Amino acid sequence: MEETYTHGHGEPVLRSHRWRTAANSASYLLPHLRPGLDLLDIGCGPGTITAELAGRVAPGRTVGIDRAPEVVDQARSAVGRDAEFLTGDVYGLDFDPESFDVVHAHQLLQHLAEPVAALEEMRRVLRPGGRLAVRDADYGAFVWHPADDRLDRWRDLYTEVCDRNGGDADAGRRLPSWVDAAGFSDIEVSSSNWTYAEGRTAAWWAGLWADRTTSSTFGDQAIDYGLATRAELQTIAEGWREWATQAGALFVVVNMEVMARP
Ligand SMILES: C[S@@+](CC[C@H](N)C(=O)[O-])C[C@H]1O[C@@H](n2cnc3c(N)ncnc32)[C@H](O)[C@@H]1O
Image 1 (tube, rainbow, N blue to C red):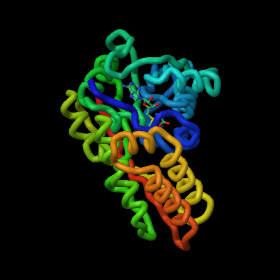
Image 2 (image 1 turned 90 degrees about the vertical axis):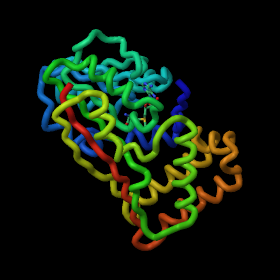
Image 3 (image 1 turned 60 degrees about the vertical axis):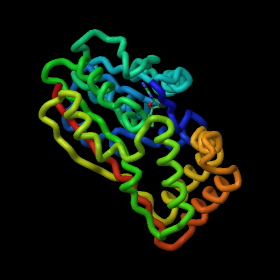
Image 4 (image 1 turned 180 degrees about the vertical axis):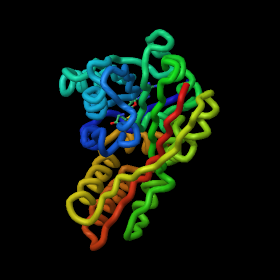
């Protein structure tokens, strides 16, 4: 299976992932959690969301898994008192059938060449009556203001790199059909946004993407694939920083969410 994780785990990427909380990234799931449930979080990254979900289901077991051992180590040292963190691959989960009440994956399916196969594996480890909860962004649906050619170019480039890596930057809109194709039932679809507005949050978001463009595997891959030059990445990064200084700067990250039964 040809698949490369676009973002890598460099500092600007983890700066973004560590900002994530259960409240800002998994609010659709929270009303369905209760003490005693066993929960698996796949593609857990640095584990900030995992740790908070663990607090909701304790004394139930919470396990976070990720294919990248370096980020599993970081999760274990930062939030490892709240959940177990293990290296593992969604395509071959090292758990018996029907091991968990909840299987959660946040911003994972967009990076997979075979999302339906991954969802089938998630279904295998869910107990009857359990719940799948998946959430992914949809880059094609992002909204920003004011317009800037350099941000348009960023989105096109990101989409192309993701495609070359086997993923799908517009995964959000495809979640319901992928979940259905994997054999789940009782599919419930919702969406929610991250909103970054003029001032501190827009500057934070823009700074992240400026740094991610010049100093993360996304930028390196864009060059390796012959899709951009280092000078162009620099121009895009400057575009991000300048965009955030404008009056009324606003960026909305659209995320789709699906809950379903195995
Ligand atoms: C965008 S990050 C999301 C991290 C975390 N869920 C969050 O939202 O903060 C996606 C994570 O999925 C992991 N990943 C990619 N492919 C995977 C696979 N086949 N199996 C397990 N994890 C995978 C990556 O290493 C990365 O840490």
